[in-house]
Image (cartoon, rainbow, N blue to C red):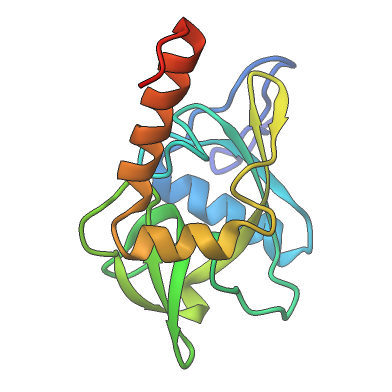
Length: 171
């Protein structure tokens, strides 16, 4: 007979997604990363558009004693921050990191202690394909543009230009 305090095993059928609150997702991620394992999940929100979009799947890896660098995209949580956020490191002051979403031209999230960082984004998948832009050597430039509030306008301008080129209308 099952004990009244026993909890059933958590299971998800193949092809299904487990729905968790942001706080539960952060706790699960902390535990998986603490074991040195990568953690994959589907992001919600538009604050990192165009490099990470709503419903993309990201892989977070442990920091492995390598502090986050300017341009890295990190997952973090903590008091006053909220349960779980994925944004780019755009600056540093000692052991505190200046964090900002790529799609946020206004002020950065603020300085947060390195200890609030759970891990760094190593992979982004969209519609089953890997998205490489935003995680490579260009990440430092993206961090600078984001911090100056220029990334979103530049991306918007590029979208308009590409759209015009596709239609054969250049100005």
